[in-house]
Length: 445
Image 1 (cartoon, one colour):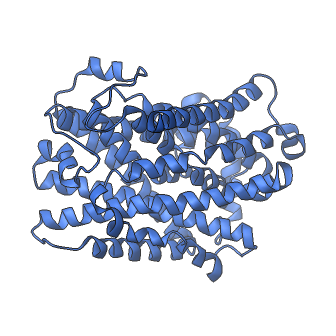
Image 2 (tube, rainbow, N blue to C red):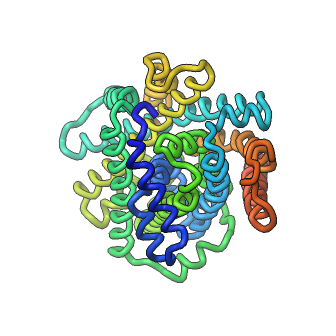
Image 3 (cartoon, rainbow, N blue to C red):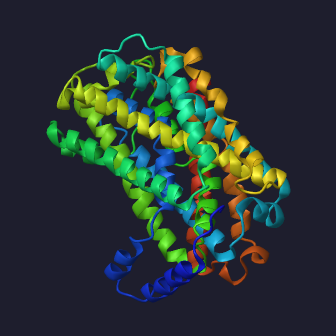
Protein backbone atom coordinates (compact mmCIF):
# COMPACT_ATOMS: atom_id res chain seq x y z
CA UNK A 1 0.00 0.00 0.00
CA UNK A 2 3.02 2.26 0.52
CA UNK A 3 4.36 1.32 -2.92
CA UNK A 4 1.30 0.62 -5.11
CA UNK A 5 1.72 -1.69 -8.13
CA UNK A 6 2.61 -0.18 -11.48
CA UNK A 7 -0.67 0.96 -13.17
CA UNK A 8 0.41 -0.29 -16.60
CA UNK A 9 1.42 -3.68 -15.27
CA UNK A 10 -1.81 -3.95 -13.28
CA UNK A 11 -3.92 -3.05 -16.35
CA UNK A 12 -2.17 -5.76 -18.40
CA UNK A 13 -2.76 -8.23 -15.56
CA UNK A 14 -6.48 -7.43 -15.52
CA UNK A 15 -6.72 -7.84 -19.30
CA UNK A 16 -5.10 -11.27 -19.03
CA UNK A 17 -7.45 -12.30 -16.23
CA UNK A 18 -10.47 -11.29 -18.31
CA UNK A 19 -9.21 -13.56 -21.10
CA UNK A 20 -8.53 -16.42 -18.69
CA UNK A 21 -12.06 -16.16 -17.34
CA UNK A 22 -13.36 -17.85 -20.49
CA UNK A 23 -10.38 -20.15 -21.09
CA UNK A 24 -10.40 -23.94 -20.53
CA UNK A 25 -9.92 -24.90 -16.89
CA UNK A 26 -6.31 -26.14 -17.12
CA UNK A 27 -5.19 -23.10 -19.11
CA UNK A 28 -6.93 -20.80 -16.63
CA UNK A 29 -5.22 -22.49 -13.68
CA UNK A 30 -1.80 -22.25 -15.34
CA UNK A 31 -2.39 -18.55 -15.90
CA UNK A 32 -3.48 -18.03 -12.29
CA UNK A 33 -0.28 -19.62 -10.95
CA UNK A 34 1.70 -16.54 -12.06
CA UNK A 35 -0.18 -14.25 -9.68
CA UNK A 36 -0.92 -16.19 -6.49
CA UNK A 37 0.46 -14.81 -3.21
CA UNK A 38 -2.01 -13.62 -0.53
CA UNK A 39 -3.05 -17.21 0.19
CA UNK A 40 0.52 -18.11 1.10
CA UNK A 41 0.65 -15.17 3.51
CA UNK A 42 -2.34 -16.67 5.31
CA UNK A 43 -0.70 -20.13 5.29
CA UNK A 44 2.46 -18.66 6.78
CA UNK A 45 0.42 -16.83 9.41
CA UNK A 46 -1.62 -19.85 10.47
CA UNK A 47 1.31 -22.30 10.31
CA UNK A 48 2.62 -21.11 13.66
CA UNK A 49 2.77 -22.44 17.19
CA UNK A 50 -0.97 -23.20 17.32
CA UNK A 51 -0.90 -25.49 14.29
CA UNK A 52 2.44 -27.04 15.28
CA UNK A 53 1.29 -27.79 18.83
CA UNK A 54 -2.17 -29.11 17.94
CA UNK A 55 -0.77 -31.32 15.14
CA UNK A 56 2.15 -32.66 17.18
CA UNK A 57 0.01 -33.46 20.23
CA UNK A 58 -2.73 -34.95 18.03
CA UNK A 59 -0.33 -37.41 16.39
CA UNK A 60 1.90 -38.11 19.40
CA UNK A 61 -0.96 -38.75 21.84
CA UNK A 62 -3.84 -40.00 19.69
CA UNK A 63 -2.14 -41.45 16.61
CA UNK A 64 -4.19 -41.03 13.43
CA UNK A 65 -7.54 -40.52 15.21
CA UNK A 66 -7.60 -36.70 14.96
CA UNK A 67 -6.45 -36.31 11.35
CA UNK A 68 -9.89 -34.93 10.50
CA UNK A 69 -9.51 -31.80 12.64
CA UNK A 70 -7.14 -29.54 10.66
CA UNK A 71 -8.74 -30.12 7.21
CA UNK A 72 -12.18 -29.44 8.69
CA UNK A 73 -10.99 -26.22 10.28
CA UNK A 74 -9.35 -25.02 7.08
CA UNK A 75 -12.29 -25.94 4.81
CA UNK A 76 -14.55 -23.84 7.04
CA UNK A 77 -11.93 -21.10 6.98
CA UNK A 78 -11.78 -21.18 3.18
CA UNK A 79 -15.55 -20.75 2.97
CA UNK A 80 -15.28 -17.63 5.15
CA UNK A 81 -12.22 -16.26 3.33
CA UNK A 82 -13.99 -16.79 0.01
CA UNK A 83 -16.82 -14.56 1.22
CA UNK A 84 -14.32 -11.95 2.43
CA UNK A 85 -12.47 -11.91 -0.90
CA UNK A 86 -15.73 -11.53 -2.86
CA UNK A 87 -16.81 -8.60 -0.69
CA UNK A 88 -13.44 -6.84 -0.82
CA UNK A 89 -12.76 -7.31 -4.54
CA UNK A 90 -16.32 -6.42 -5.56
CA UNK A 91 -16.36 -3.13 -3.62
CA UNK A 92 -12.68 -2.17 -3.32
CA UNK A 93 -13.42 -0.95 0.21
CA UNK A 94 -11.21 -1.53 3.25
CA UNK A 95 -12.83 -3.97 5.64
CA UNK A 96 -13.03 -1.95 8.87
CA UNK A 97 -14.57 1.24 7.40
CA UNK A 98 -16.94 -0.91 5.34
CA UNK A 99 -18.10 -2.87 8.37
CA UNK A 100 -18.50 0.32 10.42
CA UNK A 101 -20.63 1.91 7.69
CA UNK A 102 -22.73 -1.00 6.41
CA UNK A 103 -22.93 -3.32 9.44
CA UNK A 104 -22.35 -1.79 12.85
CA UNK A 105 -19.75 0.66 14.10
CA UNK A 106 -19.25 -1.10 17.43
CA UNK A 107 -19.07 -4.49 15.74
CA UNK A 108 -16.34 -3.18 13.43
CA UNK A 109 -14.24 -1.84 16.27
CA UNK A 110 -14.91 -4.97 18.29
CA UNK A 111 -13.48 -6.90 15.34
CA UNK A 112 -10.44 -4.61 15.25
CA UNK A 113 -9.87 -4.82 19.01
CA UNK A 114 -10.26 -8.62 18.98
CA UNK A 115 -7.69 -8.88 16.16
CA UNK A 116 -5.19 -6.84 18.19
CA UNK A 117 -5.86 -8.83 21.39
CA UNK A 118 -5.48 -12.10 19.48
CA UNK A 119 -2.20 -10.91 17.98
CA UNK A 120 -0.88 -10.01 21.45
CA UNK A 121 -2.09 -13.23 23.11
CA UNK A 122 -0.75 -15.42 20.28
CA UNK A 123 2.64 -13.73 20.50
CA UNK A 124 3.37 -15.41 23.84
CA UNK A 125 3.34 -19.01 22.54
CA UNK A 126 5.22 -17.97 19.39
CA UNK A 127 8.12 -16.54 21.41
CA UNK A 128 7.95 -19.38 23.91
CA UNK A 129 8.30 -21.98 21.16
CA UNK A 130 10.82 -19.98 19.11
CA UNK A 131 13.10 -19.54 22.13
CA UNK A 132 12.80 -23.23 23.00
CA UNK A 133 13.80 -24.44 19.51
CA UNK A 134 16.63 -21.90 19.30
CA UNK A 135 18.15 -23.08 22.58
CA UNK A 136 17.59 -26.70 21.57
CA UNK A 137 19.42 -26.03 18.29
CA UNK A 138 22.38 -24.44 20.11
CA UNK A 139 22.48 -27.40 22.53
CA UNK A 140 22.53 -29.76 19.56
CA UNK A 141 25.64 -28.13 18.06
CA UNK A 142 27.42 -28.08 21.43
CA UNK A 143 26.71 -24.52 22.59
CA UNK A 144 24.95 -25.28 25.84
CA UNK A 145 23.47 -23.02 28.48
CA UNK A 146 22.08 -20.28 26.23
CA UNK A 147 19.31 -18.58 28.28
CA UNK A 148 15.89 -18.79 26.70
CA UNK A 149 15.31 -15.09 27.29
CA UNK A 150 18.45 -14.36 25.24
CA UNK A 151 17.09 -16.52 22.42
CA UNK A 152 13.72 -14.78 22.70
CA UNK A 153 15.48 -11.39 22.44
CA UNK A 154 17.17 -12.50 19.20
CA UNK A 155 13.75 -13.37 17.76
CA UNK A 156 12.43 -9.98 18.88
CA UNK A 157 15.18 -8.08 17.05
CA UNK A 158 14.55 -10.02 13.84
CA UNK A 159 10.77 -9.48 14.05
CA UNK A 160 11.01 -5.75 14.83
CA UNK A 161 13.43 -5.05 11.98
CA UNK A 162 11.27 -6.91 9.46
CA UNK A 163 7.93 -5.52 10.62
CA UNK A 164 9.19 -1.91 10.66
CA UNK A 165 10.61 -2.19 7.13
CA UNK A 166 7.70 -4.20 5.69
CA UNK A 167 6.02 -2.27 2.88
CA UNK A 168 8.86 0.22 2.35
CA UNK A 169 9.97 -1.63 -0.76
CA UNK A 170 7.84 -3.61 -3.21
CA UNK A 171 10.92 -5.73 -3.93
CA UNK A 172 11.26 -6.55 -0.22
CA UNK A 173 7.57 -7.47 0.00
CA UNK A 174 7.90 -9.78 -3.02
CA UNK A 175 11.02 -11.35 -1.54
CA UNK A 176 9.28 -11.89 1.79
CA UNK A 177 6.22 -13.44 0.12
CA UNK A 178 8.50 -15.77 -1.86
CA UNK A 179 10.32 -16.69 1.35
CA UNK A 180 6.97 -17.54 2.99
CA UNK A 181 5.94 -19.63 -0.01
CA UNK A 182 9.14 -21.68 -0.04
CA UNK A 183 9.05 -22.05 3.76
CA UNK A 184 5.53 -23.48 3.64
CA UNK A 185 6.34 -25.95 0.88
CA UNK A 186 9.72 -26.82 2.46
CA UNK A 187 7.91 -27.90 5.63
CA UNK A 188 5.42 -29.93 3.57
CA UNK A 189 8.15 -31.75 1.62
CA UNK A 190 10.21 -32.49 4.73
CA UNK A 191 7.25 -33.98 6.56
CA UNK A 192 6.23 -35.95 3.46
CA UNK A 193 9.71 -37.44 3.30
CA UNK A 194 9.48 -38.50 6.98
CA UNK A 195 6.10 -40.14 6.40
CA UNK A 196 7.45 -42.08 3.40
CA UNK A 197 10.47 -43.26 5.43
CA UNK A 198 8.40 -44.58 8.34
CA UNK A 199 5.86 -47.36 8.60
CA UNK A 200 2.45 -45.88 7.86
CA UNK A 201 -0.87 -47.63 8.36
CA UNK A 202 -2.70 -46.12 5.40
CA UNK A 203 -5.95 -47.77 6.44
CA UNK A 204 -5.60 -46.08 9.82
CA UNK A 205 -4.81 -42.79 8.08
CA UNK A 206 -7.99 -43.06 6.03
CA UNK A 207 -10.00 -43.86 9.15
CA UNK A 208 -8.44 -40.84 10.89
CA UNK A 209 -10.36 -38.50 8.60
CA UNK A 210 -13.63 -39.79 10.08
CA UNK A 211 -14.59 -37.62 13.09
CA UNK A 212 -14.05 -39.28 16.46
CA UNK A 213 -13.09 -38.27 20.00
CA UNK A 214 -10.69 -40.77 21.59
CA UNK A 215 -10.33 -41.09 25.35
CA UNK A 216 -7.94 -38.72 27.20
CA UNK A 217 -4.33 -39.84 27.46
CA UNK A 218 -1.41 -38.52 29.51
CA UNK A 219 -3.61 -35.80 30.99
CA UNK A 220 -4.48 -34.48 27.53
CA UNK A 221 -8.08 -34.38 26.34
CA UNK A 222 -8.90 -35.00 22.70
CA UNK A 223 -11.58 -32.28 22.91
CA UNK A 224 -8.88 -29.77 23.88
CA UNK A 225 -6.77 -30.77 20.88
CA UNK A 226 -9.78 -30.61 18.54
CA UNK A 227 -10.85 -27.11 19.64
CA UNK A 228 -7.27 -25.81 19.40
CA UNK A 229 -6.85 -27.41 15.96
CA UNK A 230 -10.05 -25.85 14.60
CA UNK A 231 -9.22 -22.45 16.11
CA UNK A 232 -5.63 -22.57 14.78
CA UNK A 233 -6.77 -23.02 11.17
CA UNK A 234 -8.14 -19.48 10.75
CA UNK A 235 -7.60 -16.72 13.31
CA UNK A 236 -9.54 -13.50 13.67
CA UNK A 237 -6.41 -11.47 12.88
CA UNK A 238 -6.05 -13.43 9.61
CA UNK A 239 -9.56 -12.38 8.65
CA UNK A 240 -8.53 -8.76 9.17
CA UNK A 241 -5.19 -8.95 7.35
CA UNK A 242 -6.42 -10.88 4.30
CA UNK A 243 -8.56 -8.16 2.65
CA UNK A 244 -5.76 -5.61 3.10
CA UNK A 245 -3.29 -7.95 1.40
CA UNK A 246 -5.69 -8.18 -1.56
CA UNK A 247 -6.07 -4.41 -1.88
CA UNK A 248 -2.35 -3.79 -1.44
CA UNK A 249 -1.68 -5.84 -4.59
CA UNK A 250 -4.17 -3.74 -6.55
CA UNK A 251 -6.58 -6.63 -6.96
CA UNK A 252 -10.15 -5.82 -7.96
CA UNK A 253 -13.25 -7.25 -9.56
CA UNK A 254 -11.26 -9.03 -12.29
CA UNK A 255 -9.28 -10.93 -9.64
CA UNK A 256 -12.22 -12.67 -7.96
CA UNK A 257 -11.65 -15.98 -9.72
CA UNK A 258 -7.92 -15.73 -9.08
CA UNK A 259 -8.57 -15.05 -5.37
CA UNK A 260 -10.61 -18.26 -5.04
CA UNK A 261 -7.87 -20.22 -6.81
CA UNK A 262 -5.24 -18.57 -4.59
CA UNK A 263 -7.08 -19.60 -1.43
CA UNK A 264 -7.18 -23.24 -2.53
CA UNK A 265 -3.62 -23.49 -3.84
CA UNK A 266 -1.89 -21.13 -1.41
CA UNK A 267 -3.86 -21.79 1.75
CA UNK A 268 -6.07 -24.89 1.81
CA UNK A 269 -3.75 -27.37 0.08
CA UNK A 270 -0.42 -26.50 1.78
CA UNK A 271 -2.03 -26.07 5.20
CA UNK A 272 -4.00 -29.32 5.01
CA UNK A 273 -0.91 -31.15 3.76
CA UNK A 274 1.46 -29.67 6.35
CA UNK A 275 -0.85 -30.24 9.32
CA UNK A 276 -1.92 -33.75 8.22
CA UNK A 277 1.65 -34.83 7.48
CA UNK A 278 2.75 -33.49 10.87
CA UNK A 279 0.07 -35.57 12.58
CA UNK A 280 1.07 -38.70 10.62
CA UNK A 281 4.80 -38.14 11.23
CA UNK A 282 4.20 -37.71 14.97
CA UNK A 283 1.99 -40.81 15.02
CA UNK A 284 4.57 -42.90 13.12
CA UNK A 285 7.43 -41.89 15.41
CA UNK A 286 6.36 -40.71 18.87
CA UNK A 287 3.04 -42.56 19.20
CA UNK A 288 4.26 -45.77 17.56
CA UNK A 289 7.33 -45.97 19.80
CA UNK A 290 5.30 -45.47 22.96
CA UNK A 291 6.89 -42.16 23.97
CA UNK A 292 4.73 -40.54 26.66
CA UNK A 293 3.95 -36.99 25.57
CA UNK A 294 2.49 -34.72 28.25
CA UNK A 295 1.68 -31.03 28.49
CA UNK A 296 5.22 -30.41 29.72
CA UNK A 297 6.83 -32.19 26.75
CA UNK A 298 10.20 -30.69 25.83
CA UNK A 299 11.14 -29.66 22.32
CA UNK A 300 13.93 -32.28 22.35
CA UNK A 301 11.28 -34.99 22.89
CA UNK A 302 9.06 -33.79 20.05
CA UNK A 303 12.09 -33.40 17.76
CA UNK A 304 12.11 -37.18 17.51
CA UNK A 305 9.50 -36.69 14.78
CA UNK A 306 12.48 -36.03 12.49
CA UNK A 307 15.32 -37.32 14.65
CA UNK A 308 14.23 -40.96 14.52
CA UNK A 309 14.32 -40.86 10.72
CA UNK A 310 16.97 -38.35 9.66
CA UNK A 311 19.34 -38.64 12.61
CA UNK A 312 19.60 -37.50 16.24
CA UNK A 313 21.56 -34.36 15.31
CA UNK A 314 20.55 -33.41 11.76
CA UNK A 315 16.91 -34.38 12.33
CA UNK A 316 16.74 -32.39 15.54
CA UNK A 317 18.30 -29.37 13.82
CA UNK A 318 15.86 -29.55 10.90
CA UNK A 319 12.93 -29.84 13.31
CA UNK A 320 14.13 -26.80 15.27
CA UNK A 321 14.73 -24.69 12.15
CA UNK A 322 11.39 -25.68 10.61
CA UNK A 323 9.46 -24.76 13.76
CA UNK A 324 11.50 -21.54 14.07
CA UNK A 325 10.55 -20.53 10.51
CA UNK A 326 6.88 -21.17 11.30
CA UNK A 327 6.97 -19.00 14.42
CA UNK A 328 8.99 -16.15 12.85
CA UNK A 329 6.59 -15.71 9.93
CA UNK A 330 3.60 -15.73 12.27
CA UNK A 331 5.17 -13.23 14.69
CA UNK A 332 5.86 -10.75 11.89
CA UNK A 333 2.40 -10.95 10.35
CA UNK A 334 0.72 -10.52 13.75
CA UNK A 335 2.69 -7.29 14.16
CA UNK A 336 1.59 -6.12 10.73
CA UNK A 337 -2.05 -6.68 11.77
CA UNK A 338 -1.64 -4.31 14.73
CA UNK A 339 -0.25 -1.69 12.36
CA UNK A 340 -3.30 -1.93 10.09
CA UNK A 341 -5.69 -1.55 13.01
CA UNK A 342 -3.82 1.57 14.17
CA UNK A 343 -4.03 2.97 10.63
CA UNK A 344 -7.83 2.69 10.68
CA UNK A 345 -8.42 3.54 14.33
CA UNK A 346 -6.33 6.72 14.42
CA UNK A 347 -6.39 7.68 10.74
CA UNK A 348 -2.64 7.20 10.36
CA UNK A 349 -1.09 7.05 6.88
CA UNK A 350 0.15 3.56 6.02
CA UNK A 351 3.93 3.45 6.36
CA UNK A 352 4.09 6.44 8.71
CA UNK A 353 6.33 6.27 11.78
CA UNK A 354 3.38 6.26 14.19
CA UNK A 355 1.62 3.53 12.25
CA UNK A 356 4.75 1.36 12.27
CA UNK A 357 5.28 1.90 16.00
CA UNK A 358 1.89 0.33 16.65
CA UNK A 359 3.24 -2.90 15.14
CA UNK A 360 5.21 -3.21 18.39
CA UNK A 361 2.07 -3.73 20.52
CA UNK A 362 2.56 -7.54 20.78
CA UNK A 363 6.23 -7.17 21.87
CA UNK A 364 5.51 -8.18 25.54
CA UNK A 365 5.24 -11.74 24.18
CA UNK A 366 9.05 -11.79 24.29
CA UNK A 367 8.81 -12.45 28.06
CA UNK A 368 6.93 -15.74 27.61
CA UNK A 369 10.03 -17.92 28.24
CA UNK A 370 10.42 -16.21 31.61
CA UNK A 371 6.87 -17.21 32.62
CA UNK A 372 6.07 -20.49 30.86
CA UNK A 373 9.36 -22.15 29.94
CA UNK A 374 8.05 -25.49 31.30
CA UNK A 375 5.32 -25.46 28.63
CA UNK A 376 7.39 -24.63 25.55
CA UNK A 377 4.92 -26.24 23.14
CA UNK A 378 1.72 -26.66 25.16
CA UNK A 379 1.23 -22.92 25.82
CA UNK A 380 -0.02 -22.61 22.23
CA UNK A 381 -3.06 -24.78 23.02
CA UNK A 382 -4.93 -22.65 25.61
CA UNK A 383 -3.94 -19.38 23.93
CA UNK A 384 -5.27 -20.64 20.58
CA UNK A 385 -8.57 -21.60 22.21
CA UNK A 386 -8.83 -18.12 23.78
CA UNK A 387 -8.24 -16.47 20.40
CA UNK A 388 -10.70 -18.83 18.69
CA UNK A 389 -13.44 -17.65 21.04
CA UNK A 390 -13.26 -14.21 19.37
CA UNK A 391 -14.03 -15.47 15.86
CA UNK A 392 -17.85 -15.07 16.02
CA UNK A 393 -17.38 -11.28 16.21
CA UNK A 394 -15.90 -11.28 12.71
CA UNK A 395 -18.34 -13.89 11.38
CA UNK A 396 -21.34 -11.80 12.42
CA UNK A 397 -19.86 -8.69 10.81
CA UNK A 398 -19.18 -10.41 7.49
CA UNK A 399 -22.62 -12.05 7.56
CA UNK A 400 -24.31 -8.64 7.85
CA UNK A 401 -22.13 -7.26 5.02
CA UNK A 402 -23.02 -10.26 2.86
CA UNK A 403 -26.70 -9.40 3.14
CA UNK A 404 -26.23 -5.64 2.61
CA UNK A 405 -27.54 -4.38 -0.72
CA UNK A 406 -26.11 -0.92 0.04
CA UNK A 407 -22.63 -2.44 0.38
CA UNK A 408 -22.51 -5.06 -2.38
CA UNK A 409 -25.13 -3.70 -4.78
CA UNK A 410 -25.53 -5.96 -7.81
CA UNK A 411 -22.61 -8.08 -6.57
CA UNK A 412 -24.65 -9.40 -3.66
CA UNK A 413 -24.98 -13.15 -4.39
CA UNK A 414 -28.45 -14.55 -5.04
CA UNK A 415 -29.87 -18.04 -5.36
CA UNK A 416 -27.49 -20.95 -4.83
CA UNK A 417 -24.42 -18.73 -4.49
CA UNK A 418 -26.10 -16.78 -1.69
CA UNK A 419 -26.97 -20.02 0.11
CA UNK A 420 -23.36 -21.25 -0.13
CA UNK A 421 -21.87 -17.94 1.04
CA UNK A 422 -24.31 -17.39 3.91
CA UNK A 423 -24.28 -21.08 4.81
CA UNK A 424 -20.47 -21.05 5.02
CA UNK A 425 -20.48 -18.19 7.50
CA UNK A 426 -23.25 -19.75 9.59
CA UNK A 427 -21.51 -23.15 9.53
CA UNK A 428 -18.25 -21.57 10.67
CA UNK A 429 -20.02 -19.86 13.56
CA UNK A 430 -21.86 -23.04 14.59
CA UNK A 431 -18.67 -25.13 14.52
CA UNK A 432 -16.59 -22.73 16.63
CA UNK A 433 -19.39 -22.09 19.16
CA UNK A 434 -20.19 -25.81 19.47
CA UNK A 435 -16.51 -26.69 19.83
CA UNK A 436 -16.01 -24.10 22.57
CA UNK A 437 -19.15 -25.27 24.37
CA UNK A 438 -17.94 -28.88 24.41
CA UNK A 439 -14.53 -27.69 25.59
CA UNK A 440 -15.99 -25.68 28.49
CA UNK A 441 -18.26 -28.56 29.53
CA UNK A 442 -15.31 -30.94 29.41
CA UNK A 443 -13.03 -28.52 31.27
CA UNK A 444 -15.38 -27.34 34.00
CA UNK A 445 -18.05 -30.02 34.08
